[in-house]
Amino acid sequence: MIGSRVARLGSIACHVRTVADRAPDGTPLYAPRGELVIDAGGERVLCHLCGRAYRDLATSHVYRAHGIDPTAYRVLAGLTPRHPLQSPARSADQAALMRVRIASEPRIGEGMADGARLARSGELQRRAQRAYRERPPALERQRQLSADGSRLGNRPGASVQGTPQGACARARLR
Image (cartoon, rainbow, N blue to C red; front, side):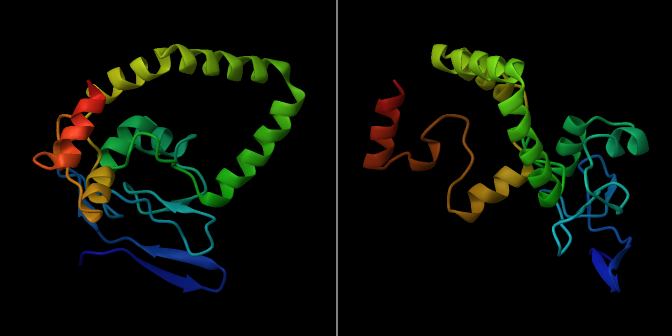
């Protein structure tokens, strides 16, 4: 049976482990590739590899339980490199804690200033472009582009070639 179902038992969710998809190497996945399944309350996310729900997959679960790092997990699951591997509730909790730390610890402000300096100098963009060229496009991004009528291309403006807007886009990039 293909698909992922969640049976509700009071306040406890029991995930019925069914193979929803397969990774390119044939690994069975218990959640669809290219999306991170979040429970109805936004408290937990479903692990593609074992079908269990956790508040956070990246901090320890994927490494301890499956022996891979979060970057490799994202590639296997077809997620974008910056896709959070935690529940929305955990993200909100961490954001609140970070706002307090930024206000109280000078080193964090200094690090943020260094990041802003790298961004202003263009070095941050160069590093991002290098990293982007070295990885394949994520399935999640391919789905986003196909949903809004765009398509993936190897060069900027590839989706609008042959149109007057495409010529303008190419001219801006030169």
